Length: 288
Image 1: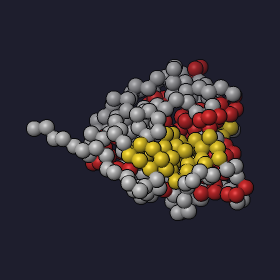
Image 2: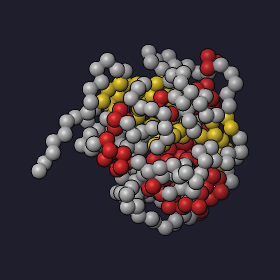
Image 3: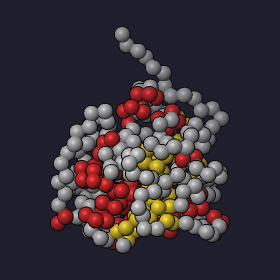
Image 4: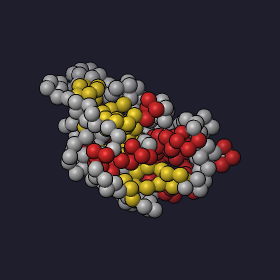
Protein backbone atom coordinates (compact mmCIF):
# COMPACT_ATOMS: atom_id res chain seq x y z
CA UNK A 1 0.00 0.00 0.00
CA UNK A 2 1.30 3.45 -0.89
CA UNK A 3 0.89 6.18 1.70
CA UNK A 4 0.58 9.69 0.30
CA UNK A 5 1.81 12.48 2.53
CA UNK A 6 0.98 16.13 2.13
CA UNK A 7 3.42 18.99 1.73
CA UNK A 8 4.86 21.17 4.44
CA UNK A 9 2.64 22.96 6.97
CA UNK A 10 1.44 26.44 6.12
CA UNK A 11 3.04 29.55 7.61
CA UNK A 12 0.39 32.20 7.02
CA UNK A 13 1.23 35.35 8.94
CA UNK A 14 4.71 34.21 9.96
CA UNK A 15 8.05 35.82 9.13
CA UNK A 16 9.35 32.69 7.40
CA UNK A 17 8.12 30.31 4.73
CA UNK A 18 8.17 26.55 4.37
CA UNK A 19 8.68 24.63 1.15
CA UNK A 20 9.24 21.19 -0.32
CA UNK A 21 12.71 20.20 0.89
CA UNK A 22 14.74 16.98 0.56
CA UNK A 23 13.05 15.90 3.83
CA UNK A 24 9.40 16.67 3.08
CA UNK A 25 8.67 13.02 2.26
CA UNK A 26 9.64 12.08 5.83
CA UNK A 27 7.49 12.32 8.91
CA UNK A 28 9.09 14.49 11.57
CA UNK A 29 9.94 11.34 13.55
CA UNK A 30 11.64 9.82 10.49
CA UNK A 31 13.46 13.09 9.88
CA UNK A 32 14.82 13.10 13.43
CA UNK A 33 15.89 9.47 13.20
CA UNK A 34 17.52 9.92 9.78
CA UNK A 35 19.41 13.19 10.14
CA UNK A 36 20.56 13.63 13.71
CA UNK A 37 23.43 12.27 15.70
CA UNK A 38 23.91 13.53 19.22
CA UNK A 39 26.30 15.59 21.25
CA UNK A 40 28.22 13.04 23.36
CA UNK A 41 27.19 13.31 27.00
CA UNK A 42 30.69 12.36 28.14
CA UNK A 43 31.94 15.73 26.93
CA UNK A 44 30.61 18.91 28.51
CA UNK A 45 29.45 21.37 25.84
CA UNK A 46 31.93 24.02 26.91
CA UNK A 47 34.92 21.69 26.61
CA UNK A 48 38.35 22.78 27.77
CA UNK A 49 38.91 26.05 25.95
CA UNK A 50 41.70 28.23 27.30
CA UNK A 51 39.35 31.17 27.69
CA UNK A 52 35.84 32.43 27.08
CA UNK A 53 34.88 35.24 24.72
CA UNK A 54 32.70 37.68 26.64
CA UNK A 55 31.68 41.04 25.20
CA UNK A 56 31.08 43.71 27.82
CA UNK A 57 30.21 46.56 25.47
CA UNK A 58 26.91 47.58 23.96
CA UNK A 59 25.34 45.89 20.95
CA UNK A 60 24.87 49.41 19.60
CA UNK A 61 28.66 49.72 19.27
CA UNK A 62 28.91 46.71 16.93
CA UNK A 63 28.68 46.84 13.12
CA UNK A 64 25.03 46.84 12.08
CA UNK A 65 25.55 43.99 9.64
CA UNK A 66 28.22 41.42 8.80
CA UNK A 67 28.22 38.89 5.93
CA UNK A 68 31.19 36.57 5.48
CA UNK A 69 29.59 34.91 2.46
CA UNK A 70 29.80 38.10 0.41
CA UNK A 71 33.19 38.81 1.98
CA UNK A 72 34.53 35.55 0.51
CA UNK A 73 35.31 33.72 3.75
CA UNK A 74 32.78 30.89 3.28
CA UNK A 75 33.06 27.81 1.05
CA UNK A 76 30.17 26.38 -0.94
CA UNK A 77 27.24 24.79 0.88
CA UNK A 78 28.01 21.13 1.53
CA UNK A 79 25.82 18.10 2.22
CA UNK A 80 26.37 15.76 5.16
CA UNK A 81 23.97 13.18 3.73
CA UNK A 82 22.59 10.58 6.14
CA UNK A 83 25.62 10.75 8.45
CA UNK A 84 25.13 12.68 11.70
CA UNK A 85 28.26 14.72 11.01
CA UNK A 86 26.85 18.25 11.24
CA UNK A 87 29.40 18.98 13.98
CA UNK A 88 32.29 18.29 11.56
CA UNK A 89 30.83 20.61 8.90
CA UNK A 90 30.29 23.36 11.44
CA UNK A 91 33.88 22.99 12.67
CA UNK A 92 35.46 23.00 9.21
CA UNK A 93 33.39 26.03 8.26
CA UNK A 94 34.75 28.03 11.19
CA UNK A 95 38.30 26.84 10.44
CA UNK A 96 37.91 27.75 6.75
CA UNK A 97 36.97 31.28 7.78
CA UNK A 98 39.94 31.55 10.13
CA UNK A 99 42.31 30.24 7.45
CA UNK A 100 40.97 32.76 4.94
CA UNK A 101 41.44 35.56 7.46
CA UNK A 102 45.02 34.52 8.29
CA UNK A 103 46.32 33.39 4.88
CA UNK A 104 44.05 35.09 2.36
CA UNK A 105 43.19 31.68 0.85
CA UNK A 106 39.76 30.04 1.00
CA UNK A 107 40.30 26.28 1.13
CA UNK A 108 37.62 23.64 1.67
CA UNK A 109 38.73 21.54 4.65
CA UNK A 110 38.17 17.87 5.43
CA UNK A 111 35.14 16.83 7.45
CA UNK A 112 36.06 13.20 6.90
CA UNK A 113 39.34 13.58 8.78
CA UNK A 114 37.42 14.90 11.77
CA UNK A 115 34.90 12.06 11.53
CA UNK A 116 37.59 9.38 11.23
CA UNK A 117 40.23 10.71 13.60
CA UNK A 118 38.60 12.32 16.63
CA UNK A 119 37.19 9.39 18.61
CA UNK A 120 39.85 9.99 21.28
CA UNK A 121 38.35 13.47 21.63
CA UNK A 122 34.93 12.07 22.61
CA UNK A 123 33.45 12.46 19.13
CA UNK A 124 31.34 9.63 17.72
CA UNK A 125 31.65 9.95 13.95
CA UNK A 126 28.24 9.72 12.27
CA UNK A 127 26.63 9.38 15.70
CA UNK A 128 27.55 12.92 16.71
CA UNK A 129 30.31 15.09 18.11
CA UNK A 130 31.39 18.50 19.36
CA UNK A 131 32.92 21.34 17.38
CA UNK A 132 35.23 22.45 20.18
CA UNK A 133 36.64 18.93 20.47
CA UNK A 134 37.30 19.08 16.73
CA UNK A 135 39.14 22.37 17.19
CA UNK A 136 41.22 20.71 19.90
CA UNK A 137 42.13 17.87 17.53
CA UNK A 138 43.17 20.33 14.82
CA UNK A 139 45.22 22.30 17.34
CA UNK A 140 47.18 19.14 18.16
CA UNK A 141 47.24 17.33 14.80
CA UNK A 142 46.42 19.79 11.99
CA UNK A 143 43.85 19.28 9.23
CA UNK A 144 43.92 18.36 5.54
CA UNK A 145 41.88 19.76 2.68
CA UNK A 146 38.65 18.27 1.36
CA UNK A 147 40.49 17.47 -1.86
CA UNK A 148 43.18 15.39 -0.15
CA UNK A 149 40.89 13.74 2.42
CA UNK A 150 37.45 13.65 0.73
CA UNK A 151 34.09 13.04 2.36
CA UNK A 152 33.09 9.36 2.27
CA UNK A 153 30.36 9.23 4.91
CA UNK A 154 27.51 10.83 2.93
CA UNK A 155 25.57 7.57 2.65
CA UNK A 156 26.48 6.10 6.04
CA UNK A 157 23.17 5.70 7.91
CA UNK A 158 23.06 7.12 11.41
CA UNK A 159 21.46 3.96 12.80
CA UNK A 160 24.20 1.66 11.42
CA UNK A 161 27.37 3.75 11.21
CA UNK A 162 30.41 2.54 9.33
CA UNK A 163 33.73 3.42 10.90
CA UNK A 164 36.49 4.41 8.50
CA UNK A 165 40.08 4.22 9.77
CA UNK A 166 41.94 7.46 10.38
CA UNK A 167 44.13 8.05 7.34
CA UNK A 168 45.52 11.51 7.97
CA UNK A 169 48.81 12.66 6.45
CA UNK A 170 50.35 15.64 8.22
CA UNK A 171 52.49 16.42 5.17
CA UNK A 172 49.26 17.44 3.40
CA UNK A 173 47.90 19.63 6.20
CA UNK A 174 46.41 22.98 5.23
CA UNK A 175 46.18 23.96 8.89
CA UNK A 176 49.28 22.87 10.76
CA UNK A 177 49.34 21.48 14.27
CA UNK A 178 49.94 24.05 17.01
CA UNK A 179 48.86 26.92 14.74
CA UNK A 180 45.32 27.26 16.12
CA UNK A 181 43.45 27.22 19.40
CA UNK A 182 39.81 27.91 20.20
CA UNK A 183 37.57 29.83 22.55
CA UNK A 184 34.02 29.38 23.73
CA UNK A 185 31.59 32.26 23.49
CA UNK A 186 29.83 33.15 26.73
CA UNK A 187 26.56 31.19 26.69
CA UNK A 188 23.22 32.96 26.70
CA UNK A 189 24.76 36.25 25.59
CA UNK A 190 23.42 37.81 22.42
CA UNK A 191 25.99 40.59 22.59
CA UNK A 192 28.87 38.11 22.88
CA UNK A 193 27.77 36.03 19.87
CA UNK A 194 27.27 39.13 17.73
CA UNK A 195 30.63 40.54 18.80
CA UNK A 196 32.37 37.22 18.13
CA UNK A 197 30.96 37.08 14.61
CA UNK A 198 31.85 40.72 13.97
CA UNK A 199 35.42 40.46 15.25
CA UNK A 200 36.52 36.87 14.66
CA UNK A 201 34.64 35.48 11.67
CA UNK A 202 32.24 32.55 11.27
CA UNK A 203 31.24 30.99 14.60
CA UNK A 204 30.13 27.40 15.24
CA UNK A 205 26.83 27.05 17.08
CA UNK A 206 24.71 24.19 18.38
CA UNK A 207 20.93 24.47 18.26
CA UNK A 208 17.66 22.60 17.82
CA UNK A 209 17.32 21.44 14.23
CA UNK A 210 14.65 18.78 14.80
CA UNK A 211 11.54 20.92 14.48
CA UNK A 212 9.13 20.89 11.55
CA UNK A 213 10.10 24.52 10.96
CA UNK A 214 13.69 23.42 10.35
CA UNK A 215 12.68 20.35 8.35
CA UNK A 216 10.62 22.34 5.85
CA UNK A 217 12.32 25.76 6.06
CA UNK A 218 12.14 27.66 2.79
CA UNK A 219 13.17 31.21 3.58
CA UNK A 220 12.60 34.30 5.66
CA UNK A 221 13.48 34.81 9.33
CA UNK A 222 12.76 31.86 11.62
CA UNK A 223 11.46 33.25 14.91
CA UNK A 224 9.18 30.50 16.24
CA UNK A 225 8.34 26.82 16.10
CA UNK A 226 11.69 25.80 17.54
CA UNK A 227 12.36 25.41 21.27
CA UNK A 228 15.92 25.83 22.67
CA UNK A 229 18.05 22.67 22.62
CA UNK A 230 21.21 21.39 20.99
CA UNK A 231 20.95 18.42 18.64
CA UNK A 232 22.32 20.01 15.45
CA UNK A 233 25.36 22.12 14.55
CA UNK A 234 25.54 24.92 12.01
CA UNK A 235 27.76 27.90 11.23
CA UNK A 236 26.88 31.52 11.95
CA UNK A 237 28.32 33.45 8.99
CA UNK A 238 26.85 36.87 9.59
CA UNK A 239 23.98 38.92 10.94
CA UNK A 240 21.86 41.93 10.05
CA UNK A 241 20.54 44.15 12.84
CA UNK A 242 19.10 46.67 10.37
CA UNK A 243 16.74 44.23 8.68
CA UNK A 244 13.01 44.63 9.30
CA UNK A 245 13.37 41.56 11.52
CA UNK A 246 17.01 41.33 12.67
CA UNK A 247 18.62 37.94 12.08
CA UNK A 248 21.68 35.73 12.30
CA UNK A 249 22.74 34.31 8.92
CA UNK A 250 23.42 30.59 9.29
CA UNK A 251 25.04 28.09 6.91
CA UNK A 252 23.65 24.56 7.15
CA UNK A 253 25.08 21.29 5.78
CA UNK A 254 21.98 19.87 4.08
CA UNK A 255 22.72 20.91 0.51
CA UNK A 256 21.41 23.83 -1.53
CA UNK A 257 17.87 22.45 -2.00
CA UNK A 258 17.11 23.20 1.64
CA UNK A 259 16.39 26.71 2.90
CA UNK A 260 17.71 29.74 1.03
CA UNK A 261 20.25 27.91 -1.14
CA UNK A 262 21.45 26.07 1.96
CA UNK A 263 21.30 29.06 4.31
CA UNK A 264 18.87 30.11 7.03
CA UNK A 265 18.03 33.34 8.82
CA UNK A 266 17.37 32.96 12.55
CA UNK A 267 15.80 35.85 14.43
CA UNK A 268 17.90 37.86 16.86
CA UNK A 269 15.76 38.16 19.97
CA UNK A 270 16.25 38.90 23.67
CA UNK A 271 15.58 35.43 25.07
CA UNK A 272 18.48 33.99 27.10
CA UNK A 273 18.92 30.91 24.91
CA UNK A 274 18.13 32.57 21.58
CA UNK A 275 15.77 31.18 18.95
CA UNK A 276 16.31 27.41 18.65
CA UNK A 277 19.02 27.68 21.34
CA UNK A 278 21.55 29.43 19.11
CA UNK A 279 23.14 31.12 22.16
CA UNK A 280 23.65 27.94 24.21
CA UNK A 281 27.12 26.80 23.11
CA UNK A 282 28.93 28.90 20.45
CA UNK A 283 32.66 28.46 19.86
CA UNK A 284 35.26 29.43 17.28
CA UNK A 285 38.92 28.75 16.44
CA UNK A 286 41.64 31.38 16.79
CA UNK A 287 45.23 31.70 15.66
CA UNK A 288 47.56 30.29 18.32
